[in-house]
Amino acid sequence: MLNKKINFGIIGCGMIAKWHVDALNTIADACVLGVYDINKTDAQKFASVYGLNIYDSIEDLLSDKDIDVINICTPSGLHGPLAVAVANAGKHIVVEKPMAITTEQIHEIMKACKENNVKLCSISQLRFTPAIQKTKELVQSGKLGQILCGDIYMKYHRSKEYFSTSSWRGTKAMDGGGALMNQGIHGIDLLQYIMGPVKSVFAKSKTLVHNIEVEDTLAAIVEYSSGALGVIQATTSIYPGYSRRLEINGQRGSVVLIEDSISKWDIEGEDSPEDIVLNQSAYQASNDPTAFSIDGHIHQLTDMVNAIQNDTKPFVDQYEGKKAIDIILAIYKSAEIGLPVEL
Image 1 (tube, helix red, strand yellow):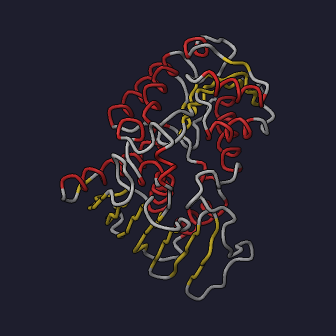
Image 2 (cartoon, rainbow, N blue to C red; image 1 turned 120 degrees about the vertical axis):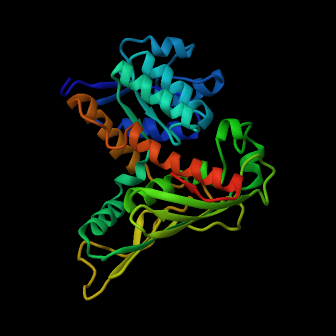
Image 3 (cartoon, one colour; image 1 turned 60 degrees about the vertical axis):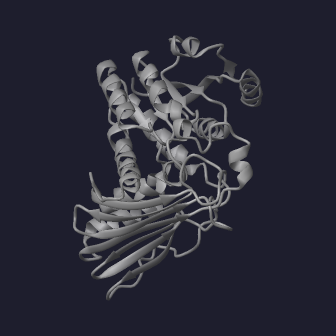
């Protein structure tokens, strides 16, 4: 399949679908053929902007022999069942975060992908940013010495209208959780990607501001398999909302990231490398869910195209996508029972 153009179809024409189509349109070996949305008006509006076909049903999309990959851009609660249906139709899968919202759904996805020999790309576009890759390399190099702390602060603001104007946001069935599962999952993925496996968590969560079924304020203590400790905070409740802050601290040095940029790089006895520019991110998703770059999606979807063409593993497949969800579900269980939970 080397150099074959890969054809994509989209399920769901909400906000995030735009990022997918815009990103795919920059990739030479990718082509978006059409879209499906249960809301026909939304599908027509979206398709007209990009000149795409509209499928009358999911079945029509799944049965189109010209489609190689289907991107799932629906509310979170539908990700798992749709991913299984796509796999059973023999199509490769790109699924937005979270890949699924229950352990059972994750296992069903893995089973379906294996049985049908299809690839899955779990969207975690922030892993591809230069700042994250530099930080990962720094930790692996040992220059920070023994890693002692890995913390992430995701103190976001979402307006009451953000929830009240949506029928699924803030619901257990369709969101799977609140500030941590929806807004915080990318941060959790980055934390575990850099720090390594989590051994245990101990959490408290509350719904303090919004009239929703899930948490808007959460704090957790993390113990990593390495022995390091960490703190996770996630909110949609505070005003005005602050940029995501990721801190990695070692015996000989520390690095701090604000959103997609490195803001501090301190190593004992060393100056910052010439290729490290300490600055603040231009993107402020802390109070605007649309404020993020398309670059990450371009890199990740390019990786998926290459994986299909070369029959290799996507960088963030179903096994990688599972890791952040496992941590989040363990945190939710800890908050529910009031005790530490081991992974």
